[in-house]
Image 1 (cartoon, one colour):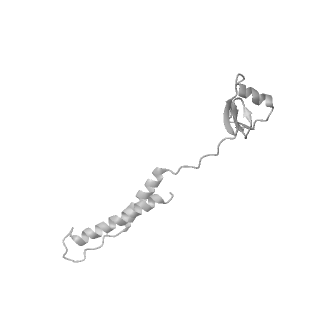
Image 2: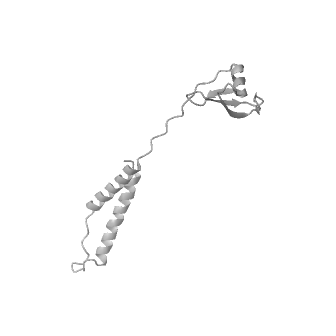
Image 3: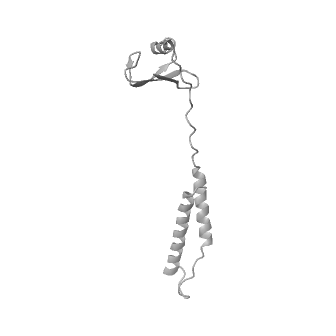
Length: 126
């Protein structure tokens, strides 16, 4: 039988029973949690057995969570930089009407490049 405190205040014991071990009404293999209460028969049996109780081990710290706002900001900054750096290509024909098809196509290409810079900027760590 393995015994370990489940919290720093020593209020509950985690008892891991192997096959054919019995604690109170529970037969192993099993894991049971026993409150550290003098009126509890399982707790009395643990104390009477004299087995050592392992100290509480806190769980490992969780890894840091990346800041979503920093990623969004990085994407927006990348998009603005790309948009400002991309020059608007001149119309194919000198007499082309402003807002004609070549200009619209050039603007769409510029927006597409800006969009992908925004996405890539969010995916890279800040």
